[in-house]
Image 1 (cartoon, helix red, strand yellow):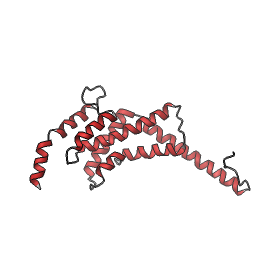
Image 2 (image 1 turned 180 degrees about the vertical axis):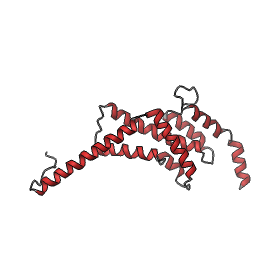
Image 3 (image 1 turned 45 degrees about the horizontal axis):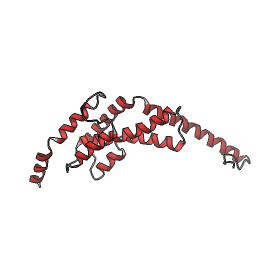
Image 4 (image 1 turned 120 degrees about the vertical axis):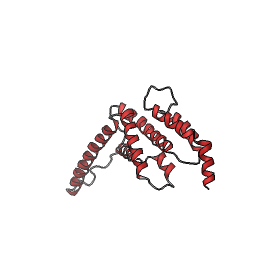
Amino acid sequence: RVHDLDSILSSHIHIIPQYQEYLTQSADAYTDSKDLRSVDGINEALDVLASIPLLSLVEEKLAIRKDLLLWGKEVTIMLDDSNKFSSFDLLEKYCTTFNCILGGSSTYRSELTKELTRNEVIEEEICRFIHEDMNSMYNDIGPKVTKIYSEATAWKKRAEGIIHTLRIYGNAFVGEAVA
């Protein structure tokens, strides 16, 4: 088995550091290296890295960046529409997804690592990476969504309390949709 691992590493050893360098360079939005600040560029890189029968830290970072970019695109569209979210459930989904990404358990990364045992050193590195990415690409959007969600949750709880109280006092249809 060790011999097989050695042959795998020797035939692919150049790819992982190469993509690590591309990833490092992509922190600068104006770099001419591989486009690792777009979903298409990341998909292309992930396809190359998937050809290696080992999971690398670079591949995990790219997977979580992909989730961040997809989340950021959706949330930016919603925020550009005068901070209007079409439903509380959608706002809750964005906030939950944001927290999952920051915690290192995004959708694409989770798919990559589902069979692996957690390694705290790698988890810390991923979380540090994604926090830096969040700050460089979406600066204040995450906290803004979290704030809107907190305010909406508080408002929803107050409204549900009022509706509950009105129903106790005989207003059985309060809060129901009227056709």
